[in-house]
Length: 207
Length: 179
Image (tube, rainbow over all chains, first blue to last red; front, side, top):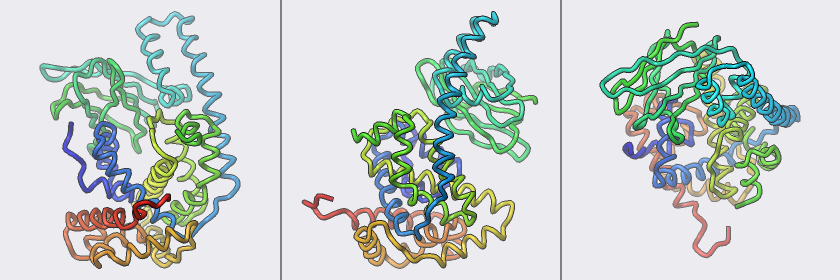
């Protein structure tokens, strides 16, 4: 397990951390009960601070938007499952079908894909102990979905774009695979997966 | 588990509706404190709530913990928008900061809790209270607070962390209390 998050536990609920530090807190509390308790306690104080702010009332339109969004999610997921079945009928390879069926478990990723045109690229193995991984990404660069098979430890994704390198955070492990869906602010040119600070796979993204 | 928490975790639309019915004004107040424009503040509430509700959650918590978590999410979403806009338009960031500092007149949802908070804030050491006030009510970043107070960022982190922990212990209800 990584080192505990320390004072970041109190800074996180106040919105004082940058994206990388915030993702580190979120990833750490998922596996560390002690730090999760500390963050939860700080969130309680932050909620009390929030109650002391000048009160404001949202317009009725916000409630309608939220309701519409929840309804849209349900209909999109139904359509997505139908689309996955259609892939079998179209005679795509079993490997592709199985991969997409696994993705079907992740509503967020699936809903995103149904609404997008996307490319995919296999990551090139790096180091003596590489990982097999693939990247699916929107042609407009609005999202990137990384899938690693048998990650062999915690994998971290580092992206490079026009403005420099960015830590996308850790892949989330589910059984034999680990995945990460990100919505970058700009087009990602390349991604490197690291395990324990060592690059284990890399790929360039072309649009 | 609380039925409301249960519905929210199960990603039932009714869970999100109940959360919204109970705390929408609190969430919007948090967003509005960072974002001057009401429509964009609503965007922050919408996006934060929907993101949490849609995500595969593993909450095992009380209603109060869910509320506190969602407040933190809305706050992070709003400050994220404030700072990304700030990079494009530094003048608006300055205006939002000024507005937030001058609008600290708390009409509270719960006057007892607010009084307890005010008392606890008053008991903080001055340097901790100053750092926390700039961070929360002033929407400043760590670097901005460090610059304004003329101390290293590490010191600011420590002061705010200690302030939050002290508030937490000071605001805990007395033993034997039902609240």
